[in-house]
Amino acid sequence: MACVAVTWACPESTYTDKWDNINVDEILESNRLLKGYVDCLLGKGRCTPDGKALKETLPDALEHECVKCTGKQKSGADKVIRHLVNKRPDLWKELAVKYDPDNIYQARYKDKIDAVKGSA
Image (cartoon, rainbow, N blue to C red; front, side, top):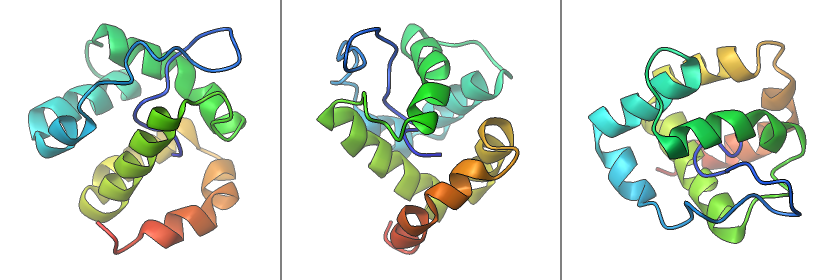
């Protein structure tokens, strides 16, 4: 699930930086906020405007290895992946089932995923 957190749709060379200043730590530290974003991504709940943009952009970011992500988006995505893999594997698994049912991205990003395991 590379780029789970902060990649937003934009037709230019990078995704819009409109939401680059979202406090990712605040979201990860709040079960309510994190669950809201995950539910949005899974189609189980309402989406905030930034959640909706993330949901629309995530497939492209995964497919193209986040090449359109800004530096802040890549940093935020790394932080989210580390958190989900180490502290919320249940949510990581749900997102993987939805966005990577054939295990394509899990295989492609295996080294990156393995590198963050245990480094919460």
